[in-house]
Amino acid sequence: MTKAQPPANFEAGLGRWLVLALPYAWLVLFFLAPFALILKVSLSEPELSQPPYAPVFDSWDASVIVDKLRSLSLGAYARLIEDALYLRSYLESAAMAGAATFATLLIGYPLALAIARSPARWRLLLLTLAIAPLWTSSLVRVYAWILILKDEGVLNHALIALGLVTEPLHIFATNWAVLIGIVYAYLPFMALPLYAAIENQDRQLAEAAADLGAGAGGIFWRITLPLSLPGVYAGALMVFIPAVGEFVIPDLLGGSDTLMIGTTLWNDFFVNRDWPAAAAAAVALLALLLGPLLFYERMQMQAGANRR
Amino acid sequence: MRIRVTPARLIALSLGFAFLYGPIALVILYSFNASRLVTVWGGWSLHWYGALFSNRQLMASAATSLEVALASAAIATVLGVLAALGLDRFGRFRTRGVFAAMLFAPLVLPEVIAGLALLLLFVALGLERGFVTLVIAHATLSLPFVAIIVRARLAAFDRSLEEAARDLGAGPATVFRAVTLPLIGPAVAAGFLLAMTLSLDDLIIASFNSGPGSTTLPMRIYSEVRLGVTPQINAMATLLIAFVGASLLLATLVGGRLPGWSAPSDEGRRS
Image (cartoon, rainbow over all chains, first blue to last red; front, side, top):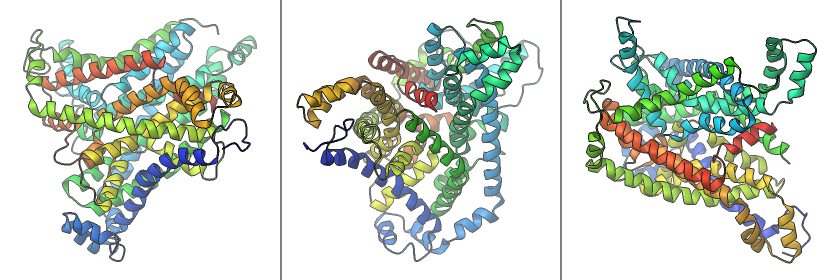
C-alpha cells in the first residue's frame, strides 16, 4: 500500500481493485448478462434451450414456455419479419419518435434560448423550473393529458365554451395525443442540453457579428445555432432513444390504430405470454437503437474525457 | 446582444412554462373538485382525499413502493459512489470503455428492454419474482444516475486536499473517510434521493419483475387509470406531486443544487 502511486490516485492496487470490482460485477451480472439472455431466448433453438436453460425453466412453473422455446427457434424472428404488425410498429415507432423529437426541439429551443439569455441571477431558477416536472410522477403527467384531451375533457370544454368549436375535437386516443404526450414528457430532456450548449457560448462572437453588421436572424442562423449543435444532438438522442421504446404514453393516450414497438412487446409478454416473441422484439428494438445508442455513448465518453 | 428581457423571450418563457405546468396544475385543481364528473367543476372538497386513505389496496402498494425505494436506493448509492470513484480516480484501466458503456446505457435505454432482460435473468437464476427482484432491478436502474451525480462532484473539488491528507500519512481508507466522503456528501445524499424517486416512479420495470405480493403504487395507479379517469386518482396524483416536491426541496437544501440535473448540464457544457 505504500508503493509509489501517481499523485492523483490515492488508492493502492488492491483497494483500487475492490472499489471497482463491486459495481463492475453488479453491472455485468444485472445489466450485461440479461442481454445475452434476451438474445438466447429470442433465438431459443432446441439445442440452445437445452442446459443450462431447460432445467431452470422446468424448475420454474412454466413448462408451457419451455415447449414454446423448443418449438420456436428462429420462428420468433421469422414472424417478426413476416407479420406486418411488427414491421408496422417498427416504422411507426421510429416515425413517431422522430416527429416527437423534432417537435420537442422546436418547442425546447426557444425556451432554452430564453433561459440562457435571461439575467444571470434568474437562470438557475428558470432552468430548475424547466427540469422540475421530471420530478413529478411520469404516470401522473401522462394521466393529466387524458384529463385535458378527452372528448369531454378540459380542452374541449374550454373550446366549446369559447365558441371556437361546436363539436368536441377528437384528439384523445389518436396518434396526435401520443405525440403531445411524448413532447410533454421529454421536453425537459431536450431543454437541458440545449441550455448548456447555448449558455456556454462565447458571447463575444455574437457581439463581433453584430458589430460587423449581422442582423439578429443572421446571428442566430450563423452563430448561435451552429455552436449549439452538440446540445441539439444530445437533446435529440435523449428524446429519440427512449421515445422509440415508449410504452406508457402510447398505451394510455393512443387509440386502437396506434402501434408502437413498446406496446407490441408489452402485449406479447403480458397478454400473449409469448416470451420468445417479446425477446425477439426487444432484440430488434435494440438493433434499431444501436446506432443512436453508440452515438450517445460516444458523446458521454467525450464529455467525460474533456473534463480531465 | 446585451442580456435583457425582450418580448420574444418573455413569450417563449411564458408559453414554455404554461405548457410544462398547466397540465400538472389542472390535476391538482381537479383533485379538490366536489363533483363526481371529472371535468365538471362542482365546488371545493377534500372528499377524494378521504376516500383515498380508506383505500386499503392503494395504501398497501404505497407501503411496498416505499420499502422497495429505500432498499434499492441504498444499494444504488453504495454501488454508484464506488463506480464514480472508479471512473474519476482510476484514470484509464483496461476495460474502462466497457465499464463506462454499461454505466451510461441504462440512462436512455427503453425500459421495456431493461425490464424484460432482467426478468429473463431472474427466471434463469431461479429467483422467485417479488420484493428481492424488484429491489435488484431498481438498484440497477438508478445506479448510473447516482454515479453521474457523484462523479460530477468528484471532478469538481480540489484534489490537493486528498493529497495533503496522504502526505500527512493517512492511508487510502482514512483519506476517503475523512476527506473525500465529507466533500462528496451532498452529492451522495442527492443521489440517494434521486434513486428513491426513480424507484417510486417506475411502472415498467416493476411490472416485469414484481410478484403477486409486491404490487407497487405505480402499478396500482396504472391499472386504475386504464379503467378511466376518477377524482380519486387526481387526489392520489396530487399527493405524489406534493411528496416528490418535498423530497426535491429537501435534496436541493441538502445538495445545494438540483440533484441530477446539475451533473448532465456539466457534461453538456464540456462536450
